[in-house]
Length: 231
Image (cartoon, rainbow, N blue to C red; front, top):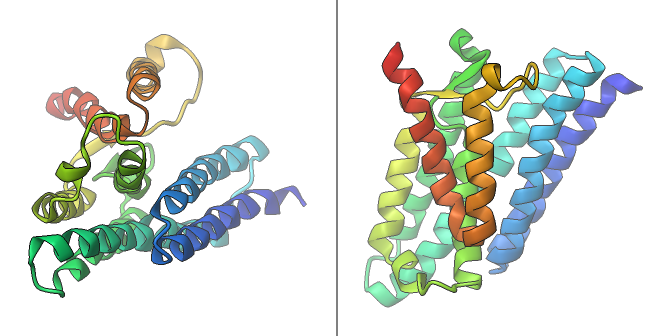
């Protein structure tokens, strides 16, 4: 029975992705964003559970990618589409522009296919992981819902949304080595970069709430730069 537990957690990821989509297309982007957060947690936990139980399978690997494609591939494209629909109406841009948001879904598929076939990505990542990309996108509806910094006009600028779509799509497939949050032990010397990232990320989220998420992902990329430059 224990060998099926990681797959059950992966299926929770997939279910949350589906629920996120239904809410996003119903115009309830905030609720969709919360389901994304649960999906990301499930995606993090399925690997932990598999390692703790010392179980793995080819089906589990494929299932993980398929679930990720929904939760962290289709979902961010849908969020961009809905946000662009709102911004285009007031910006006077052509009605086809919001469909550009699904560019991030296409590059997410490329990222996942690349990850499954790239032997360099066993202990680290090359390119922005799809969950990190999706958390940035999913934070936008939450920032709009709890806009304590007056960012709504900035976020709903169609050119910003289009630029962010292109930027994230490029980062997904970029040859950019990034560290993974996988702890083999809890020694500071072996996990200095990971501990620094987690401490700073928790502090940013505590202070800025949802507005911290893009900054946390930026911090993740910047903390990976010294390791990249050393190569």
